[in-house]
Image 1: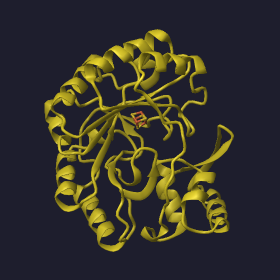
Image 2 (image 1 turned 180 degrees about the vertical axis):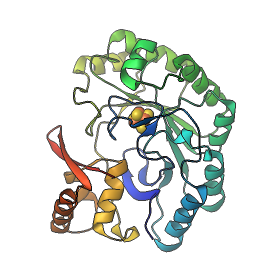
Image 3 (image 1 turned 90 degrees about the horizontal axis):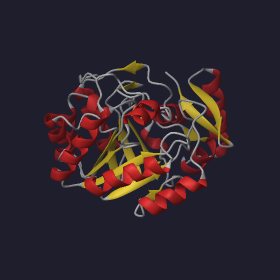
Length: 310
Ligand code: SF4
């Protein structure tokens, strides 16, 4: 069966072997983050819709769990854009919780959690991972380049309201971008906000995959010292993923490479380390996919990354 919306499991830095679900068409988002690993947002939308028929996602999940015998550590909803724009999120989450045993993680930019009805849809997840890059509106516009219908104060308050009722693990992530959110004022602002929000964990990330804008760089070492000073509980996650990718869930190795790299650009090095097959087959598949223009190869931080194309 061709899997269009369910992919992996892929090694994830925080979630082990994670079976991904993508309920959103490629690059449909209410942000266009300068660091986005999927490239610039093509469809800047703030409208919630059933972008993909819910039944198709359910069928793929049923198929995966019936035929692969490879239980993931987590099932993770992570879009090729912002997954909370999917209007059937509540139904999808209920279906997963009612039918499959791995814990459910939800990765979101958090922008719609100020809406009570949206908050209610994610309350039965096991881990919620919203992003907060800044508490200052001018930096928010520079980093996240949001849809005009998105308001930072609503978002910050929405996360606080969500946190109060949420029973699962609440992990926030900050993506640091040199020259925008790496100053003392920015880091202190985040620290004050996190003292009020009280997340279970705070992850500080830097762009380890090719960003939407080439000028995006990790902050300098001074900023990391500032983070250690103001946010001592922060965890740095710019380390590599570990885990294995089993090709048996895919029709072919080429299928696997396109499917994973479209959502999650992956370095050649990690692909060879993770996929249970020989390196020559990977080299051959990558060469063929590049010739067919199904993937592109990008150099970033001294490594070659594969990004899947439509
Ligand atoms: S990083 Fe996430 S929130 Fe930002 S543009 Fe990409 S998909 Fe949207």
